[in-house]
Length: 190
Image (tube, rainbow, N blue to C red; front, side, top):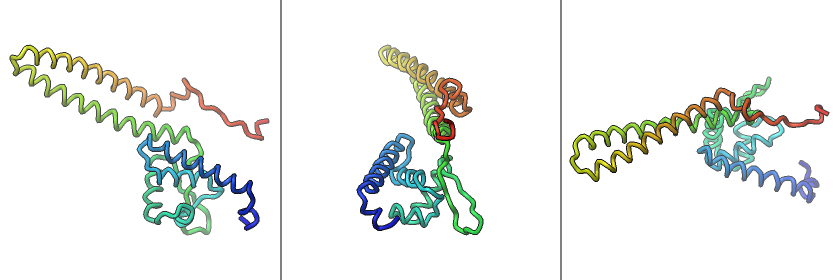
């Protein structure tokens, strides 16, 4: 960008607005267990006109190359960035996955499946312990509390099983039959 453009108020407003949106992306990605720095990396890659090398990312974000490498690996594992091959370029290039629906599906499914399976295991373990205590105790008040809690655990488990079914619907793409993707209008569509 030329020095004249850097000093131009419209260009400054453009850069500020883009940076503000990148910050918003970074902040909201914490919902999926992604750190703000990795969120900013994703935002920088998303708005980059061309695929970026780790050195490009380091320069753009002022973070270490190791941090960039770790961040790219995390984003790649989540199907949010992908490597790009360019003839004659030896360094690895990366760009964001253009299909945010695909990224959401992979990220949502992975996070929710993991958390839900953990919750089912915890509920099962709690149920086993409470059933053993129930068999051993003669205390009627404790028996009543345990039976009440076992009902609660049963309800929780049913919910978690339902949630896994929901995750399956998202993961399989069937969610888009129920809630269709919104197609972006482009100039070519007109």
